[in-house]
Length: 303
Image 1 (cartoon, rainbow, N blue to C red):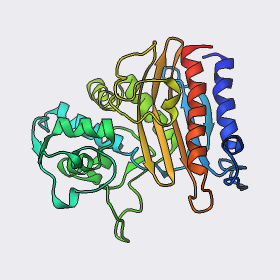
Image 2: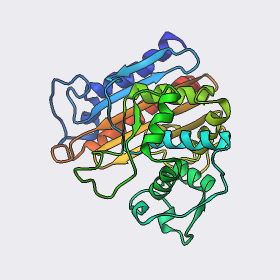
Image 3: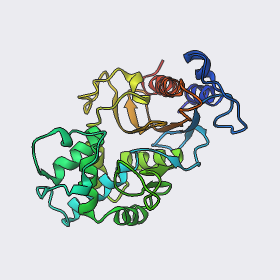
């Protein structure tokens, strides 16, 4: 990838770290800190962008810091489900019935549906498409829990990405403090390996990418590409994107791979902030993620 292309992405990421987006979005969120990933701005950023073909790093800010990533760790669950399916240890048509402790609020469709059970394959599709919390919990129980997922991730050579347990409406002192954690470098490396068919096997990697291609949340980095959120599995104007996003009150995360006529990039962009002291930080985070997306679009489309 050319020097001018990598400079485009690096400049966009440097603007985030410098707090430029705070000034563009508005007053009321500007803070100062000694943290280089949070210097001059309300949002603490971690970014890693690579060429998945060559491994060249196009941009990186605080990429090795492990932090809260909301739902991004669900990718590990999908990898384990795909592994079990392709090894014959799990039947994709098996009907799964939620337990009382699986029932949670927030993201997903299943809790709004009348059906009392769903097939394994349908649960995985719901996790990929809508980050479905109920489907996540039911699948996690079926594959043996977070420890089984962690062991499978370690065996697959996945580093700095973790799913700590089921989705919970309330976390007590005995529960993991957050659903998942990861570093931007760990996530970008993982999605790059999925793109190349290197996670467990090509068949497993392609299965996971297929589920993530259903993701309807294009509100973050992916918002810059003008794709149909409900149907973008096939190339649109020569661009194909698949991703996983994560959202909680004070965190946004987006990781994925975008391919176009002029190139391909694997990315992870993570943002976190303090809602109490930075009321405009959510808007700054979303604007900053779209800003990186615009730079990535120039890379893969040219221009």
